[in-house]
Image 1 (spheres, rainbow, N blue to C red):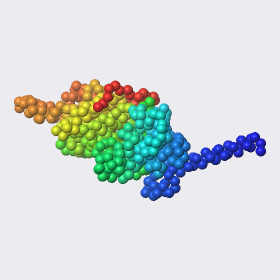
Image 2 (image 1 turned 135 degrees about the vertical axis):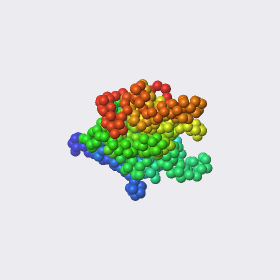
Image 3 (image 1 turned 90 degrees about the vertical axis):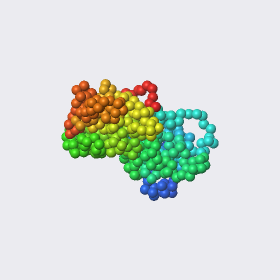
Image 4 (image 1 turned 180 degrees about the horizontal axis):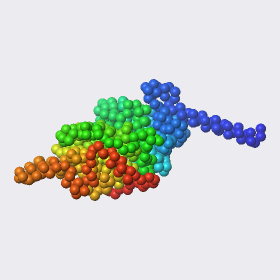
Length: 508
């Protein structure tokens, strides 16, 4: 045998061993466990990644980490593309060690987050695991940066998405509230600091996973998560849709989507349906979702946290091809009053929009910030101040429309503040405005009858006096709203590079 032949034989033995090791890593928990998992109609960890990413784009990171007996150390990670744009992705594999986080997996999670920042790509995490692996306590490792530190560093710099496909506990679950957008698969997803067995052992409470931290708790009650999806496939589709509105990082601007990408509704058009939808009578409710659906490009509205803080709607949409973050009062819920949950939801959403340079559209129709002892005990002043600060800090284009009414601080948190970096401030003709409702204010201040009548007349006089002072840039026919906004968005659209937004101080 010649030297070259011997070299080839030596290499072949090594390559065969490499192929065997990689095949073992891709086998996940083995045929029996994987088939049993799939039998419920769910996607396994690797199938979730390939479904999320463009076909054939996945490049795995760290497949051989950890003990070969624990394939990929129960965490599949790597990079690929979504709609042609690079993303970093990681998925806990429940078929291996219950998706628990081993020492090697912890390093891989950290590496994935660090690469997302270094490469300026979104990070998508798929969560279904038991948290830190119990046997980690038997290992001795020097302290090292962990993935939660690395994920915290991503905030406001690259978009982050967490998809909760099953029960997620402890350390793993904390990746969700550190993410910009959290999707839970209905019937399977759950988030908690500790699972039912530990809860029972430590507190004596007997509770199942869904009651402890399912979507009804994490989405509807606590607001820890944002949206639910009916299946793994639906969750992955929603994640792709969410990312489509955002730039890949804070160093870029949101992409304009036109006919070449399937958005054929980018032109101007009148909205005669708004005259039928919106009552002039302030006491009659209407569905703001219907107004937003008519205003936006067809089929482009994605509501964020639709079942939490429901007196305010937060949504991503496109208007004339431009990605826009929408904050709108919902008159069908407490007349659109700003509650603690609604203000908290809106403040977080506004911070996301500002970080990634999304124009923000405020559609105001509210009687003010929620009053009463229950609201005060819940901290409405603090929540309202946080929302006010979040809208004030916006440096992306800011559009305000007073649809019908906006009273007191309820108008301020909705962006109706002179000389506060508004790109455009508009009103419809049938608006009612004031610091507080005039009749109540007059009686509270013990004004005489003539003064009280004057206050009421002023309140019901419409936007004309404020338009004369340039509080409003214009009072418009509701049918022209889309066209006016498209022109405004076109006038402030900027392409190319951007810079992350730096803030000083904090929002409590």
